[in-house]
Length: 384
Ligand SMILES: [Mn+2]
Image (tube, rainbow, N blue to C red; front, top):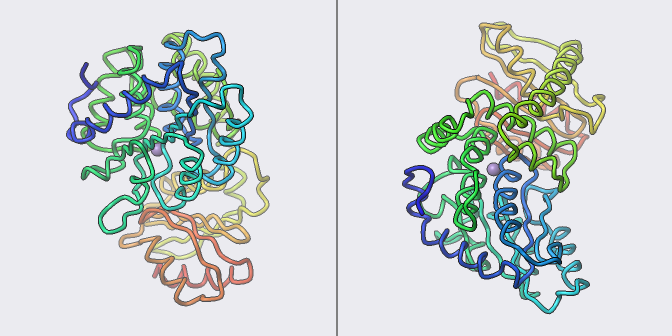
């Protein structure tokens, strides 16, 4: 069987993918399989594709002993996850069988090292399928030697544009042939993938009747569900894998609600915006009183306001979503680099517990509440 697209990165990952497929196939019905994944559209898509493939091959009446899937709360495999995965395994009736743990769309950085080591200590087999930049040490991804299979485009010279959901959907087809042609496009669009691979997958989806608009709409709905529910639900399967007509109806209903909530948020945040500067506009929005747990969350709100003001102003803009001890940044200023800014803040505010990260033009900075005004002053200084 071949991959859905011609991809240099997939080709280079091929032997790792084959190894993972072999291990998964050997485990089906013999060993419990635990799927842990990032709680966003990309993570859900890849995990649900593999879950469905395994589920379709499982003939045991005790299916729930042999297949479990749950989203992780943190964007890495953390102690909490390992604790529950190991604890549940120990009290399970099939506890004498070694579980296979599949970690998807997270698990490549040193933040996951301790929890993965712990799972290995309890005999788990571990496969990591991820596309986040791994932590490297002496040129090697430090997680790799603690896993049975490590699949990440960065270890073969690729990057995050081949997403975990794409790889997961491809892997699922080797486990059991199933109609998942549109899933890699959904995963990639959700993660803002660029380049040849996502173009290829959009083409594959189009041939099956999925326009880019529908793909984007489903991706939005899954991200919305992930944010709201963050749990294992067949509703996610419905959105991803029911027939095209049903998918359209459901995505339409949910997306309309998302649009309504986002429009309401824009109105609320407009009233909270303080705009300064002429050629380069700085838009400071106090998001600290926005109800926590409502949609859209802080990061997304800042993105929404960025897109709103980008249309309003011809000038370059810097949007700051300001909370008591964090600021979310979105900008189109030239030469802006959130990571460089964080480094400067760290040097100047040694007592400020500065943390955070992101891309050049989008990211979040965390700090001790006591230095909030200094952080704001220094960000404005940096922006000049
Ligand atoms: Mn992802």
